[in-house]
Length: 70
Image (tube, rainbow, N blue to C red; front, side, top):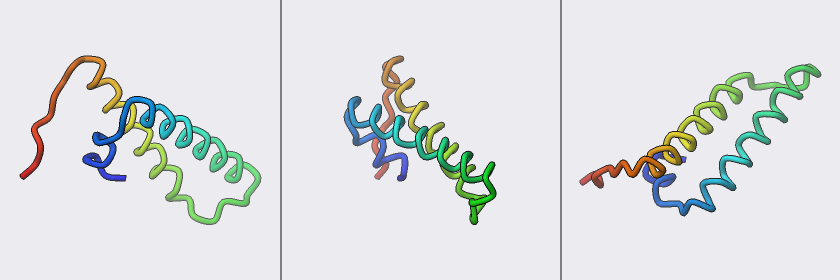
């Protein structure tokens, strides 16, 4: 998901996406611990997604507005 797509989501959808991403990270770590994870690059990808979601949620709490790209 790109940043523009994330910013278009509502607060409730952001919260759901964040919860789903955290669950996915938990599952990936579990699969890594049990030696079932094939693609190790999935973990940083999900961590980056969580960081993006948390950043946008924080921006909204602080009232930071970003201009639309043209």
